[in-house]
Every structure is written in structure tokens, then in C-alpha cells.
Image (tube, rainbow over all chains, first blue to last red):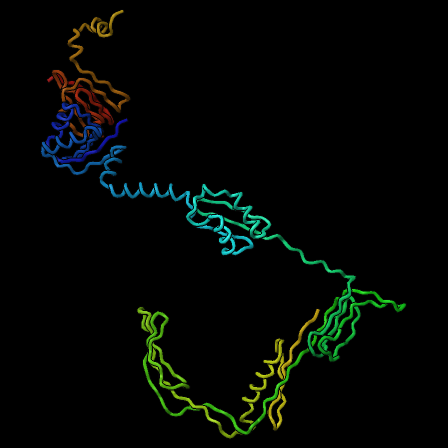
Length: 360
Length: 89
């Protein structure tokens, strides 16, 4: 069925016009009249002839609507750039759907490991998907990486590669083989729980590094013994001690009286300001935010500090001595500090740090 | 076997030329009128559409009348048809 076009026009003597159109073998359909305005439909093959006639008769054409395939052709002619872009897009889509644009890796191996192996095979971004032999790639990945299995699939332009390691099982424990539980470092036994074996220490005992805590043997009533795998739990308290001597003086940091002012700007996370001429200082800043510019203005006052050594009593030096002693004791220990004990004498401060470890 | 036109001629008592040069109108269901052999549109109103026919005027009266199609010698009028009359002018 031929497509029709709708023409809306205004003018007088519409009846005469319709007769003229009919006399010229132009079939007119769907005539709708509204006072001086009239809308007619003509076949697309007669549109140009009808428009020429209307223009010749000085009718005012208000609207021409093309329908069907003819309308699509007119639209394409008017928007030729859009049609060209659409064609290029469709061609690009058809072409790139066969090109690998991304490689997604999952499993027990890293992206770098898998990509390195894929590169050896010439598989990666930009490769033609139809040229990839998936079975060969899977076999190569398994052999090269020592994997249990590998799968290679593609969905549109993305290549999905999954590679998995073989599962390992823990080595079974031979419970008939002798094993002792020994102390890893010096400490005091806090508690002993023994399920299998013979405990050699009790709570409160001091032990040294390497001392057997639970022996891997079972002693029977008749005096015989059997090797067993010692199973139990021993909690040891560990300690570390350090001494900070009192020298009669202490070092303090105090302001010198010199002050420096400046103004700084924070813009998008970066600070722009002049540095103060002091090495040691303390600063007092007032910040003003300027929204919506994301700008921070800071007014800074710098007070110079100097380190001086001055005579001081033990009470005055106590905080500093305690901190010094704890720091030294902590440096020597390899456990988590749970408690700190201080012993203060006229010679100085002794700090003991305590912690516990559980040995299975 | 006679031709259809010859049959009509005998039946209606009309000459063939009269039959050939005449007009015909058919009303379908009170909503469509098909007119053949008209000589042009005379009036076009929502309540009346008139066509020149041989020796007269064919009026279609009703409401919401529109011309569905008009060609050289045929036309189709649709709407609520109340009356179709031919007046010899």
C-alpha cells in the first residue's frame, strides 16, 4: 500500500481546488475542513504535484507531514549527517563485537600472572575473539600456572578467564609420634591445661626458654611409658624491665618570645603559605572557609621554641623518666604489653612491662 | 449469454449510452456513501456535501460528514448519513 502524505493549507474556494485536484487525477483522501483551513491526504507520488498546484493557486501551505516509507526517506535526506553517523556506529558495532576489548580474571591467580601467560599465547585486548582456541588456552594456562582447572569464555567483547589452584589438605598429625610443648621464652607459668601428655610445670613456676612444659609421653601405673603427641595449653607471663636514671636535670622546651605571623591559603587540598623562620615552633591558626569557592584562609601565629636543660627535682623529672623507662622496656619485648609497673627510687625509675602468651 | 450491460439495458429500458454516462450512488450502513460518475464537488460542509451529477445535484445530508476520498469520477463520503437526495437542477 502506497504511503500517504498529509497537507494542511488555508485559502478560499476549497471546493474548486478539490475538483481541480480530482480533475488532474490526484486522488485526495481524508478531507477535513475547518472554516478556511483544510487538511487533505494525497499519495506520496502526488505530493510534489499537489504542492505545486497549491502554490500556483496561492494557497498557504501550513504543514506537510510525510508518512510511511516516503516519510522515512525524507527524514533521512534532511538528517544526512545523522544517517551517516548511525551507519558508522552500526558498522563499528559489528566490527568490534569480534574484538576483545577487556580481559576479566578471577580465581586463585592474580591478573598479572594470568595476563603474562595469555600474552605468551598472543591473547589479550585487541585480539580477534573468533581466532582464540579456548581449549588450547585453558590447557596452556593449567600447564603453565600449575592450576587445577581453567575456563575461558567470552561474552560480547569481554574475555572471562578463571583459573583455580588445586586444593591442599593439611598434613595429618600422627598422634603416636612424640611431641613436647616447650616455652618459647623466659616467663612465669600462669595456668596449665593438659589433654594428652605429662605436664612438667605448674602455675607459679618460672621457666626458661626451651624448657619442656608438657612432655609428650604417657606414663602408666606399672611404670611403662608411651610416646604421645602432647596436646594442651600453657599460659606464660612474660616481662621486660628497663631503668631510667635521675641525673638532677631535665630538658624542657619553652617559648623564646619570638613570634611570626603569616596568612596561608588552602585550595583543593593544597596549602600555599610562607614557612616560618624557626626550626622549632608551635603554631596557633584561625581558619576561615569561603564557600562555595572551596577556599580556606588561615591566619597563623608561630611561637619559637627552644630546648633548655635546667635543674629539676625527682618529682619534676618523674613523668619524663617514666616515659623513658617504658619506651626502653617496650623496645626489648616481643609480646603485647598488658600491664606496666613502676618502681621509683632516688636513683631513678624502673619500669616493668608485662604481657601473656598462650602456648598450644 | 447476454452481457451484463445488455441485460441492464433490457431490464431498465435505458439506452447503453445513458447507462455509461450516468452516475451511481450506494449507501452502506447509514455511514458511508460511495458516489460514482460525479462531475465535481459543489459544497463541502459538516452537515452537507453536494456533488454535481449529470443534469442535477446529489446532496448528502447528515452530521460530521467528511470526504474520505475524492477522485476524478468517484468519491466516498463518511459520517452520520441522514439523507441522500438528487435534485434535478
